[in-house]
Length: 457
Image (cartoon, rainbow, N blue to C red):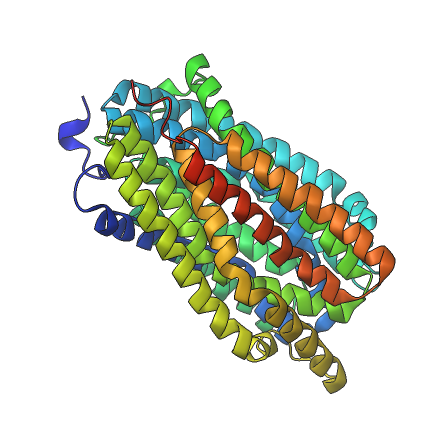
């Protein structure tokens, strides 16, 4: 009933698979790029105007923000899988029910996360062992950030809906607007008015609210497959069950990885504020490395979902092979660049009155680059196969692999290694080690299992 005038939707079941995937993944990549600018602008401007303690405060919050928000963002990805499948099958009535159920579900999640984050911030940071010289700024930054959780969750949810029906361009346009606004507000509040680290979080919240409002405006427009109307806003039992079925494993997967990262951050905190600033700067740079990896993974989820929904099994396999190869090659090219020029990139994040502190921060950050960067191809392979599994409705597979390897094995390794020798390089080594193990397991699963099973009926 929507098909003839759903001008914003795009079938991923037509055209050359490689061309379709690249054209669909590119706006997702650019969206992820501007999303990364949110975090990087905070670190860059705070580090250059307020010094190393303020930079450490912003950076110490990153893993905790990821832990809490990634669960809800992952859970909302379940809606994308459900919607892409119904859209590929041409069942627009089910698409509409899933869209409305997802909107209500995401709103509830955002409110819960906001209340929890604002209330628990000091306790969690204290548990993480954030140093006393950093703690007041960390509490301020995090509390204000969590006040804006509703628009963060809603934006990611609505972006997922648009991506599921092949519209990856509009979320990009809205994110460009809000990212530019974030940089301007960061610079104005922190650089011009010198209002302190809390205002970097406020700038982010304002900007994310703008992107959420723009997405909501698009979703409420008439004549789209995903048209959201206020009178239809309710939970549909079947849709909610499917969203939770496909989304909960991804949410759990994201949050256990986040939990492991919080544990890593807690260990980094034990090396002091210089190590916190260095590793935080590295994580911002690594965030850009993740962009082509995550973009192709997200594109593969929608692509596989639509094609399996349309019973285009061979086409799904062709796209899967292309997506894996592209992810691995791009990640390794970026890794080689970072291996040689990591110190230069780290130096952009810190300007401090103490030149010895700056030198030490750059040295620690460059060391982390050299330990991890050449193994990015393993990270890319794991994420690409995980994206394929989610699109095929097998989100439980990446959840179990990530839970076992990126959480349990990583935590055991760190705990044992730190008890034997308190050296920061052993923390850095935790990542390539667990990337390797997960890639071996994913490779065996991808080659030996029939991941299309369940659709061939």
